[in-house]
Image (cartoon, rainbow, N blue to C red; front, side, top):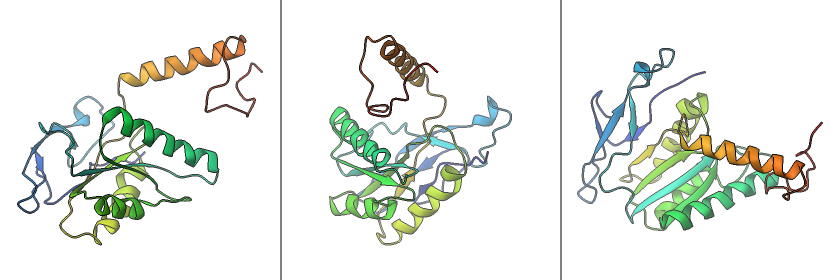
Length: 202
């Protein structure tokens, strides 16, 4: 599995820190460097991994793109829209757009443009992926870089995927409990399985 660094533009970051510094409208802010190689011997993030330690967090002029792989199955793509709606409502962030890496619309290019159209002067691309791989290391940064060329002066960052986040334990555990409750006849199918009949004992 390929791994790599979170891509932050502009300018390139050093091995100790990274910053966003593009025009006087955006203040330079420090980001924490997390080196996975210290705790995961088989993972080598050559330029480090920048995670949001920005004391100001997401600002009102930040645009967020949540991007998944994309599917030929319409229902799968619509679920990303539903997640983005939940994310926007829970966080209160004003500019949040869905995007699919391939196979479906909107594309990263479309969503990047929409964020700028809505007033974003910085774009945060958040991969809706579990672990770092080729899509995070190569495909999404490449597609985002192409999209950014159409909007000079608007910096962007591709953040880390979900990874080994401890809250995922609660998510998986909750899903397991719900499925077992459905099999026992005590709960309806969840939104993921609704109408498929797949949530059953074989």
